[in-house]
Length: 338
Image 1 (tube, rainbow, N blue to C red):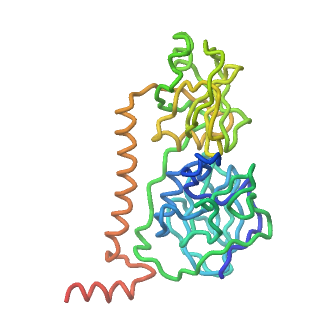
Image 2: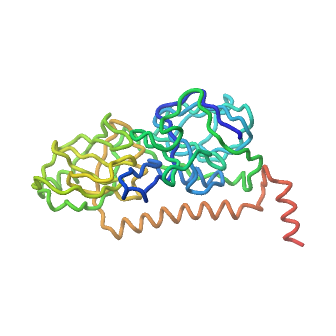
Image 3: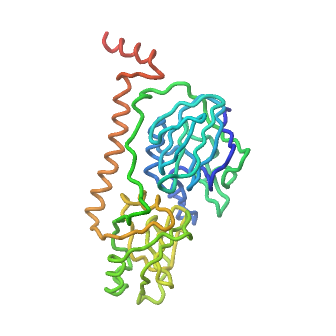
């Protein structure tokens, strides 16, 4: 089977897909891509199912050699990536050939990047997912981050319809110079916090600390108190904002535990999860409370944009320029005219 050879692994580069949310009831973390929006756009650009596995990397991407002709797309954070020493753009489908070297390097803006490959990464499914959960050594490539010398099985793909039309708008990424606004909903223990703490949370500025990883982003800022001395453990969700005993919030991420015993002050609106995931250490954050109806409408708009991108690519199947499948497309177009 064709392979991708890993020359340099980058920083914590792992295989991720949309995770294993249906196995949380068995105590397994959902895991999966931190920025699921970026993963889905990447898969769409190379013609994959949304569930296909891709590479995820944090702050520094890998250097890879492709051992087959196929198509790739780089999404998520912004990188000055190079293909055979020539700059390549993100959020655009690219064809690579046998022997080509892609050097992704350090992120210029944002934190988490993705490399989607046409056909996905052909690794075994574990609990219905190819996602890597590092602390359980589960899934992905032997349950670990990539190392130099690793080989990732892919499929050769010499053609791809709508090639020239497979590009998407760049997302807005956090700027370290400016605080970003993250919209949240009230959590189940919101009323257990004093009104002063609620206002402190909504009017204050919090900073992402270095103690942030795939389990959770620890924030530093005005500390809060909760009147609730103890509580039963309850299910967790990505974006849940827990307040532990020290009063400084933790935003739960993809590899969070399935249950937690800290009070949940708020939950990040799903539409803003990608923006939060892309925050580096020292990024300042301000929280804004919104209602459930508004959060659902924003999510609908985000999903509609993804569907529109899919529709645009599909519609461009027979539009000029035809690109890599030009000859076949012209024959099909003639058949339609006849």
